Image 1 (cartoon, helix red, strand yellow):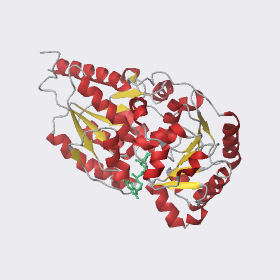
Image 2 (image 1 turned 90 degrees about the horizontal axis):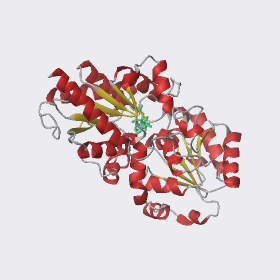
Image 3 (image 1 turned 45 degrees about the vertical axis):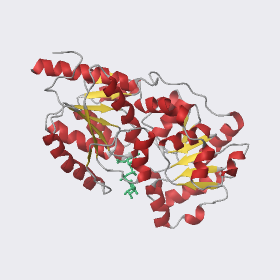
Image 4 (image 1 turned 120 degrees about the vertical axis):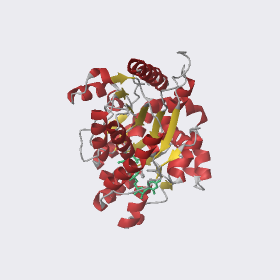
Length: 388
Ligand code: UD1
């Protein structure tokens, strides 16, 4: 057997993406698989959990991701419906393709759904970004994380805390590999290409004069059900944001879930358009530029907590917990929950002193995907040779 070619009887790795935060994780993995020796063949499956141009297509362009070979077009639904629909539509894909492995990333419903289908067909599963825990089971993603990690075969982690979390759940150490953070691979690869905030605002037809403000601007993203699905909570957050907006201008990139709930609860009147610029969901390069240029980021996103740490931009996370503690212990992140006083104090501290400086966490060096390709390629060929 030629060690420079993938064994003919070993099928492709089926790589699954579904929702927006998956795309920036998968792009460097596909590139690393193509560049590996031997090159690892892949089949890219999009479940269609996210489907709008702003939530999906744009990221394929920005990240130079190849078009998915298969789109399951599941769309939106309740957790049960969405998860079940991905499972139902993913199973025939595995029947038709001789997959050597299924690779899933992150913690969205598509991640768990495809893992369940593959494991029951005795196809190995590799989970990238394994072991993160918020210890908050109200979070749908926490359920997806715990269950995926219990049944996946290879668990690639982004920070040391993940190993301890997995050990606590009885996961054998030999399944766990600390490789670094593929999301940061994407960030470092695209940093130079980031769109300037001025160009992003101009493209959105927004008034860019706030960029001249000496205090800079605060960037906001919010979409967690715990923050945006209840009227009182969302109303309370807007009241706080309006107070933040008296300190510095705000740019709010609005997620479709949040936009829909603002409409449903009739909260449009709470948006002070003088001091808060509302933008549609942004592309990857636009968001990178907006984050990089911000004085402070206020968010409930997992990805932004990591990206702001990598960029050295202070981040106030509107959650009580984080599954990414390294961003707090090592990076620029501070958990403020929805505590108005803590949020305003956080903003004031940042305006007065620049905020937490942070450092780049271990192995967030742009080479995580390369490590995954080397490890997974070796593991699959050894398994194949042992079984042959
Ligand atoms: C999902 C993930 C979450 C991730 C987030 C990033 C789960 C459980 N949640 O949450 O972990 O942080 O994606 O965005 O998997 N919608 C659109 N267009 C789209 C997609 C969704 O308008 O392309 C609207 C629909 O009204 C939908 C709602 O957004 O009902 C929520 O979408 P869904 O995929 O269910 O959850 P997210 O909140 O996006």
